[in-house]
Image (cartoon, rainbow over all chains, first blue to last red):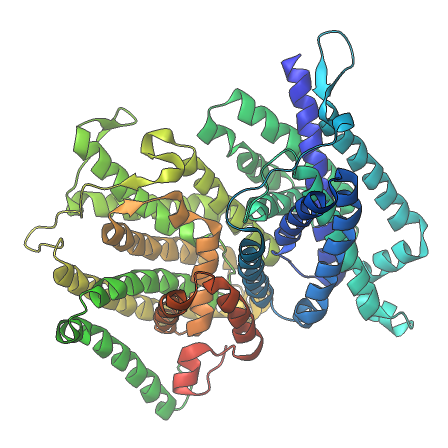
Length: 287
Length: 330
């Protein structure tokens, strides 16, 4: 029973990672930018959510407002600094987004203080559900799993079935051509960035009730997200989904079954092993 | 860089000599100003500067964006710290190896650990180029970080305090001024060694890797062994910096090998000037002194430094050293 619960925990963690990874890998695929500050958007989503909840007293309002708020921060980030980085060498991108992390972490510390905050859950999400006798599971984590699956499905439809998704795919394979065909590529990039930011904000607000909300909470998750992207194949959303579930489940089991210092490094051993066999990732993007 | 006119070369050499001259004069200056604190501050600058210089070897010359360099600094520091810990209570490391505070044993061991780790991590990372290399160095550094932050015997997140500095024969480095000049000598020797490496045939290949790896491969130079060797050498020098840092702090913690520390090291290299070796020391000085000065006005110094870093990257890529000598390649 414990193992089944942990499997669900692993899926829940994996889907959260997927929300992060999808945004990061989309941005990488289409504008060729590594945004280390993606984790800061996750943090801001959680903090804004906590504030909205304190203000309105409702978790649902927090979810509804924190997501667009994070998207706006993301778009502002893109328009102010990241836009100039697209054609720059990798080192410049990495350093600039590192500077953004330092800045945003400190801003969060000024606004919300250094202590960690807790997010309360409404009653209907706070209990546990029992599927079969003997197996109970927290309602909220189940809700996270469902939300993650729904978002993954919507993303799939968005990318493969809509006009904007077509432009995103086209932009990822040949930017110059898409621009030459008269598509406003700048706005498209900004939109993709906003979408990625919104997904990171959603991940943050879903993480807020489970983990503590504090400055720097995004710094660890962004590395794990990079691991997911590398394992899945850079730029591939399908790969990101497969890899995030794999990473989520392996990481959760390793932490439960192995001693602390060994359990936490399992993921990286897995990554090294996989890359040795498949250097381009599990499901490399077609481009 | 050696093809540049001699006026440039002499300026470059002059600026380097000036840097070392200033560093040599810090202790008397501190005595004159009655600010012994300056000596400690500049020991930290030299240790961090050496770490940044070793990173410059692969980042500035080889063009390898490694975001895990702090791991090699921290691993050497932890080796010194762990040996000191076991020397303190007479127990054995992993039940096999006795501890020691003798620098002649602990320090070579620390450098060996850093180089071994760099070899293992480099073996996987150099398989890929560019972006994947960057992500992998980051991920492996994080792995080392988690390894130590979960190791309860050595203090987990709290870190590990050392009984004191390592013991050298003939020189008492527990005295700050002695330790200062010792660090100065180490920095100078490492600088000369790295300058020789950069100027050698090996260094030429390394620069070729940055400029056009494909062409290099086409002329028949297998680039991967060079990238791997550079990674291991840089790891070894990072280990030397880690030894100095651990002895300066008499304390090691997972913070010393976190990825944000790697980010700080990259910031120092770029602030000081990529591909100049001495530039990163200037960058370390600028970074640490800026933090000191801004930190005396506000605890939120990163609010100022973050945007400053972005502006430097966007508009002043030549860095401090480039500003001093005017005009460089990279």
